Image (cartoon, rainbow, N blue to C red):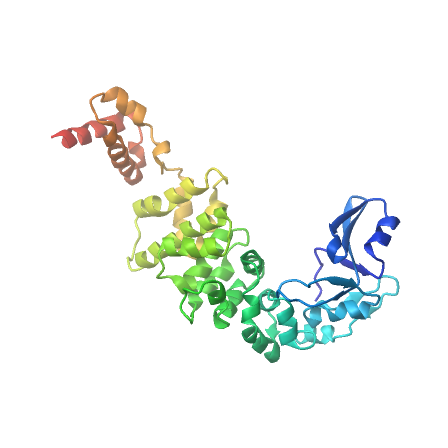
Length: 386
């Protein structure tokens, strides 16, 4: 396909114990599957012995692996024709016993042999088919697609970590929207989340935004993916879904923040002009609070929010450049100052006073001066005690 692979897999009829005799530094990375890693000039090379997989009684991994003696045996056990190509480094011959090149040219995903048998061996294979269709922009051959539907009872056996890993891998491709669309069409989400409606209809406008999102911003990608078909869900419901699917704590928290933004933004869209106060309080302040300990938040970071906020993002960047006070920690007055100045004020009222001052500062940043804030706090406290 004219792409440079990130890694190369090497296969041989030499068994692991023979490979270990040939090289000085060999690591047993997956020796039970016949895989060892040779370290040569500080570069790792994964070498796997030809294999013949035996029965897959759990739909996840072979009951035991037998070493084969020919490349043909090894290629037969692969999942899709496009993944059964081998290149002989000595002769320069490309081995293609399952018409993988033809299917790559046809942009087609097809299993080797009977698709139901292939998918029954490993329940992850149907999800991989969907992911490849999404990342490569290929079509799934009709019999293979039909088998996805007919082997769901096997797919149900895969670990949730393996499922969400495929979803995250699809986010790295050019069209993550296709993965979400295919998962919805094939009712795959419901295998792992039985409480979802039997049919899901993702919103295409939201999915379009998913394709425009920066690849290094998983939180926004997840939020758009789930918002496309769960826009009526509460944050609590979404959190349960994300935790069920074993997304990391960080990705879950990030997703919830952006999902909340999307929910608010959809409501705000009915307002013709969104004022600066709302942008600061509802969006920029939570972004700063949530990310400041992990990232240096700059214009580039704010621009990455464009799939959510559209044209308003430019206004957000302009506001951000002005470095306005957004959080209580940005104010020139704090609880200690209140304690010194108003010893009679109940500590339970500090939060009320500081939040009142923060709203003032969000409206008018020039008010963020100690003397001005003290003046405003005196006025507010006198009204509080009257």
